[in-house]
Image (cartoon, rainbow, N blue to C red; front, side, top):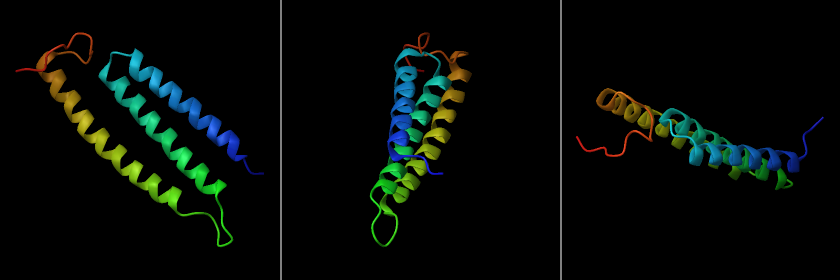
Length: 106
C-alpha cells in the first residue's frame, strides 16, 4: 500500500503551518529553534513528495532527494549554531525567553 502524494503535500502543509505558528507565537528560544526545524522537515517532505510525483520512465526524479540532503545539511548547521547561541545567551542573561531579552549588547 502506498500513500497518495496529495496526502504527503497536505501533511507537509500542516507541519509547516504548525511550525510557522510556533515560530511567531512562542517566546522561548529553544521552541523557536524547534519550530524552524519543523518547517525545514516540512520542506523536505514536499521535496520528496514532488520527486515521487514527477517520476520518469527511468525512475523517480533525483532532484527532490538531492535538495532534501541540502536542507538536512542546513538544518544540522542551524541546530549547532542555534544551540551555541542559546547557551551563550543563557550564560549571559540567565534566561532563554525572547520576551525578556531585548538587547544583545554586552
